[in-house]
Image 1 (spheres, rainbow, N blue to C red):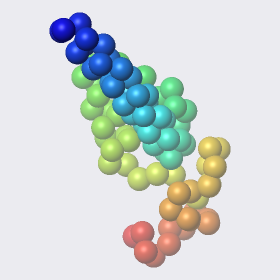
Image 2 (image 1 turned 180 degrees about the vertical axis):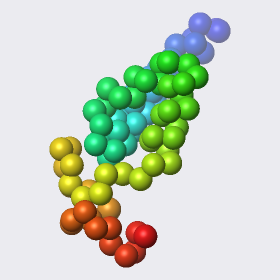
Image 3 (image 1 turned 90 degrees about the vertical axis):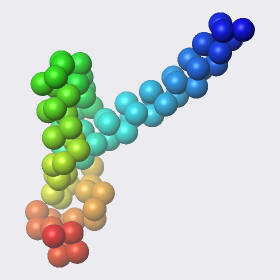
Image 4 (image 1 turned 30 degrees about the vertical axis):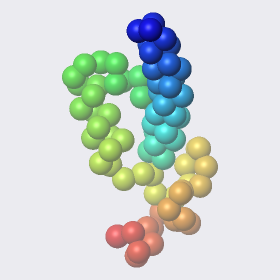
Length: 84
């Protein structure tokens, strides 16, 4: 019975792990970095702290970047007054 619970847990964890990787890659793109940048999180504890600061607290790139338009709707390098 315990083996069944393990397989169910694995079956449920894989989609959530995949979603977390995708969301972090989108945040990396918002910061104008490659999605591979999240691999720095594999370097304990420097990578963990760096990712938390870089992806958690720093503002995204203003305006368009190489990954597409700004999700905040900023047209140029000046941020709209709503977001200041």
